[in-house]
Length: 362
Image (cartoon, rainbow, N blue to C red; front, side):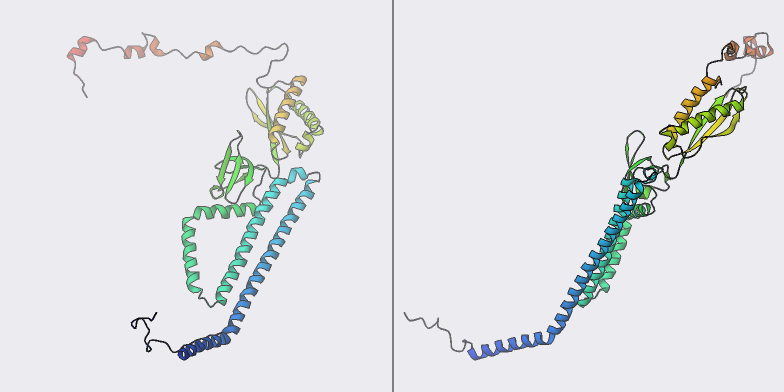
């Protein structure tokens, strides 16, 4: 079927095949020429970026392995010390483990941030990207984040320094000001304490202004013994020294005592009593148990030796002086006697005098 004349393309609108081929050839030639001129540059940039990435990855891996090996060595040394005679007293395995893990985590994170951040900046510089606006924007964003999250940053930095300085650790009994108790977990932001009544305290590291560690070094057990002023001081010293020698030879008190029990002397002398102070250097956290045991044994030894303490039973053949019944009665008032000058001075004014006399008004 013949096509209508209106649908047939005009000869003038039909593209010339030779012209199309020529344009295509020119485009391909220009592309090939551009690639030929710049392939060396692109290859150089690609190799440089690949080298930066490989070096950064290798350096990060080496640094992380070195830090992990250092942390493992710290834990191994702690376990070795723990097996010695005083290892259980001086080293807490869980405390050292958490401290080393926290330090290792911080160091690994810092190392990864520095290495990868530096590599990213070098890659951008290799791509001919201007870093000045990026660094300026990062600086402004860092300042804004620092102002907005300053409490979080303060907590984090305080936690890092507390862990690195080994101010306290798991198992230590501390007084943090806002709360006190036994440390059960140490974090970079929060320290978890268990109080004396079993409660759990979550203390932000940035809120801790001062720390009193009751588990480092040694502690002091102090006992005050109140006796009658008529007792013999040499006899008291002799009995207390016998108790101390016996306590130092028995288990587990021989481990809890880190020094001899000393009778320091008279701490207070009154008309009805005198106070003898006894002191001993003990293992941290064991001073209260030593004090209770010392009181128990000193009381039994004093009863056996006939040394009277304040509040104890009187000796045989001796009775306590009866309390004065008039001691609880108040002194009589002068107003109780109607003939006294005080009572006469407070007598009411007669009505006749009050009627004719002047009135005082407010």
